[in-house]
Length: 196
Image 1 (tube, rainbow, N blue to C red):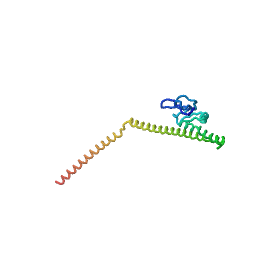
Image 2 (cartoon, helix red, strand yellow):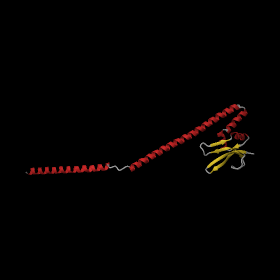
Image 3 (cartoon, rainbow, N blue to C red):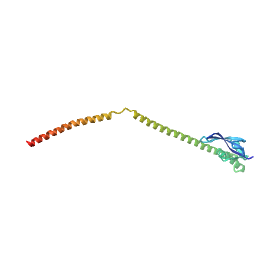
Image 4 (tube, rainbow, N blue to C red):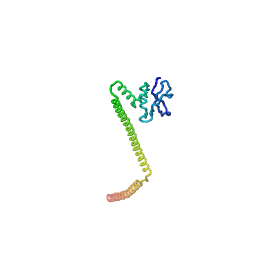
């Protein structure tokens, strides 16, 4: 029987959730399967993958062919690399201890990269939250200033300045009238002197 390691779609519309299964290649996508190996949830960031490592390795060794997406998942979890190392042991390229050491080293590096991505995403989320909070605080302060300016009592100082200008203008007007009358009297006196 030709077996495949593939994904079975579950979940609701717009929120897919997949089971990683071993099934006959002729069976429908979501139909009968031989064994469930794990699950894959692409809705989280990074995607959540739960996989039975030993059973996945067993099915690869007995000839089950993974689909492209299932191959990517198996590679991400290290199942394909473990199979590759076992092939090297069978050929005599290195012993079992060296293979296990290489695999542990690979797993540690992979976990470090995953943790780095998670922390980077968390930092980006915190940074975005800080920026949004600062923008909201600025907007709130601007709004409060606008409300304070609108509700402030009308200043009477400009009205007082206008009244003082009118008083000064009125004060200057009598002085001008006095000067004008003084000039007029001088002009009449000059006119009388010239006649007389």
